Length: 336
Image 1 (cartoon, rainbow, N blue to C red):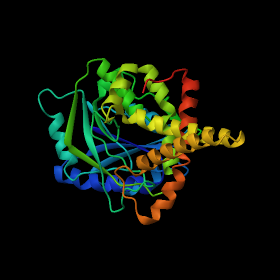
Image 2: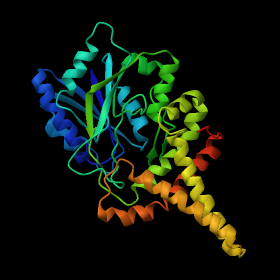
Image 3: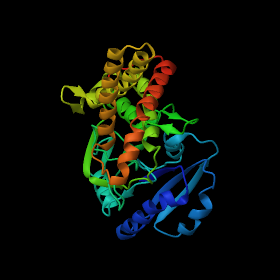
Image 4: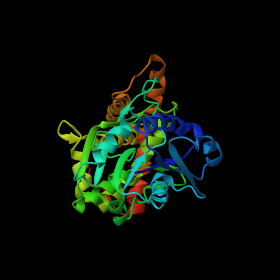
């Protein structure tokens, strides 16, 4: 088993993960090869990891000279793997205390699957607020590569991760894990979801601009839909809000907000109060929908209320600009 960890950031980002794995390897009486991929960080990671060289984690650091995103970094690590199994963990997750033991048992069965998907839960001491990005994933409704294991030969046979799902200019990535799952499923590869194979994702440091940046990720939906139209629609249908998909609801909320803003402006400019009122009503409905989306399953503290109100007016524009930029660039309009 080889573990590959792509890192974009400082050594402090990946240190908790390595600290959690070291005692697990020691308790198992085994050494674990870990390939840390330095994705062109400003401060190279190699020197900071030298002090860990004598532990039960056999660390190898490979540096990319150009920032390529997590998909490219995982492919860089994959090229160095010489074991039958390769496991990918994101740098900012922390594996549960029994993660290594459980994984060792899973791959040791007589006929293991081709792909093993673990679970990711939100954890840590800080609350998951609308401004602190935190991810939880329960496959197959959410496909993420933060806790993902493959037969090495299977992953190499399909060409690894698709590196197009990263925008280096904006440093935004999305959907590369779902795209890979769609390719493997189309080939009939066997998946297994292991809910007890757990990693925890602590909320990242909060920022007012986090929801705006996350809205820009939908630039990649036209590419994913173009390459895998049926699988993309099935993924959306796995998460419903009444009769519509959550994906459709998010899109319509942004469209309603923007259309309401435009109609209000036209009504005011042409001195047509009825048009302005209709536009204002649509604007309010779209804005409220975006407020709900931002607060959904998050802890909204009193000090978060005003920022949420403000950022709910920015997210629809960021989403629509990115989504339609993707539609134009990839020449495809998804069916949501």
